[in-house]
Amino acid sequence: MRFLLVEDSMTLASAVLDRLRLDGHVVDHAPDVEQARAFASAADYDLILLDIMLPDGDGRDFLKSHRLARNETPVIVLTARSAVSDRVSVLDLGADDYITKPFDFSELEARCRAVLRRRGGGASTVQRFGDVTFDPLAGALTVGDRRVSLRNKELRLLEIFLSAPDRIFSKPKLVDRLFSYDEDVSDNAIEVYVGRLRKHLSGSDVEIVTVRGMGYRISRV
Image (cartoon, rainbow, N blue to C red; front, side):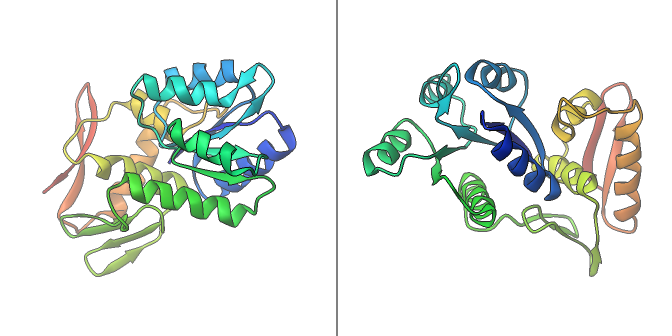
């Protein structure tokens, strides 16, 4: 999934980035409100992790404008404030959850999973399409009765396709969802990952179709 981390502490940001990227997520980092707004206007995110005290303003202002613009991207607030009134205020502004600093990374990951499950419409994240069963949060793929092991980028690419079966995704859109802005991406990177996924899906009743001049879609055979 693609996350936006808004945090001015480089020590904490580096630790969070390392942990989330190790889990296979694409993460962009904004150290202040101005850059957070720029990132949020330029890309689609699955989740935003938002600090409150930022060098050029208050993260709550970003959260408020985020919701006033009818942006439904889930937001977890990272806060050092433990007073009930502070927690209530961010929830009332539209935050989906909050976590108090300092926090354990396993708790942060669990809260991310919980928020994404709720936004997905239930307790289960399992997606089924044809004879393919996929749980993006667990990273589990089954093709027929065969368990398949995926690398991180393959897993995220399949997640994108299965989020909207039969929808055509252009190469630029896939690059935007799969890679952060600071990653060096070759011209044929998407073709490589699509090719790998096709091999994993071989023998199933699901295929990734090339739509000439437009992109790719996943469909039933």
